[in-house]
Length: 75
Image 1 (cartoon, helix red, strand yellow):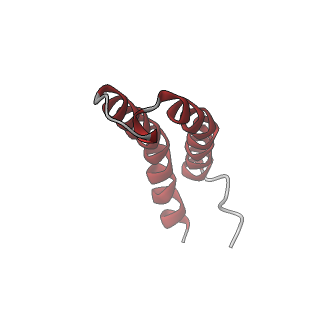
Image 2 (tube, rainbow, N blue to C red):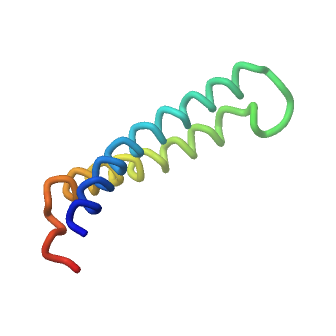
């Protein structure tokens, strides 16, 4: 079980930045298209990215602690 926790820690550490990068990439792609509708408006994207930054950082920190074995005492 401890090895699974540590392997998942690596997964969470990679998922945090990947989530943020994909979100920013999607925002640039949808805003640059110049289409009509809410998805091409930059204001919702700014709000979504601002809310997602702490989530991404939290996933990375959680993964770091899991990888280092901080949760080994829990069953």
